[in-house]
Amino acid sequence: MIIGSHVGFGKTQLLGSVQEALSYGANTFMFYTGAPQNTLRKDIDEELTKKAQELMKENNVDIKNVICHAPYIINLANNLDSSKWDFSINFLKEELNRCAKLGISYMVLHPGSAVSLPKDIAIKNIIDALNIILKTPSSCKILLETMAGKGSELGVNLEELKTIIDNVHYDIGVCLDTCHLNDSGIDLNKFDEYLECFDQMIGLDKINCIHINDSKNPIASHKDRHENIGYGTIGFSTLLKIIYHEKLKDVPKILETPYVGQNMMDKERIYPPYKFEITMIKNQQFDEKLIENINNYYK
Image (cartoon, rainbow, N blue to C red; front, side, top):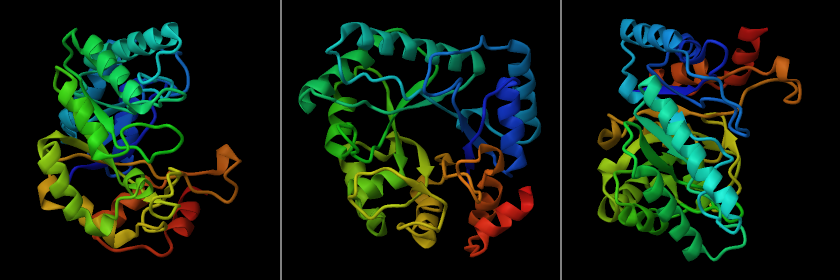
């Protein structure tokens, strides 16, 4: 099983990301190359990258399974302000270049939000932008994330994803997100049916990453609020079947579940759940005291 979580990318860059992932018992991970909400970026440190790659080899972490996530501020769907659309295109190009320097093969991208545009026009904007971006060859493959349908998000159903993939002239893939699928209206208790539809419309070979998250919301709520594994409306057993699905065994699974703490506003007293959630998943046994155990461990 290839499983990990979101990790930081701070002063020690990729090296710190690897160290954090290993502390959780992970054999893969996902990171942003800087804050997802802004454009502040430090130059990639080649020496830190080399040390990170060596540490991955020592611990049997295949760098081909490591995922980068594009920043949220990129929106390829809306071009009403051409300068902002051009910025999104150029910034995503730079992020791909940074991934190439790090040796990362996959970047997850939110397809974008239409805002005030009709959906068909917004989807065409995404297609046009990706064709512009990928005209310059990159060693990092873009994966369109399945979205919950909050606001005017695109990439909410297979039809939208298929339209984009079919009309982009270059190889792109998909990142499934279990919370987003649930919130978009997919019954994950019938996951095999969804996979069959996916295979017929797009092809299972296009699934290159899965975000494993429970959901705070009922199905088709279109809200996108992640919950800790087994503590949401999807449930532990349903998520476990997806994680261990034979057809997806070689696909990296990434946890993006919430930090745990008594007061979520106190940033110094909330803790990552990933070490415990990964253990729970590996043991295939739900831990009813997960939240309590996390709090006790980090205190």
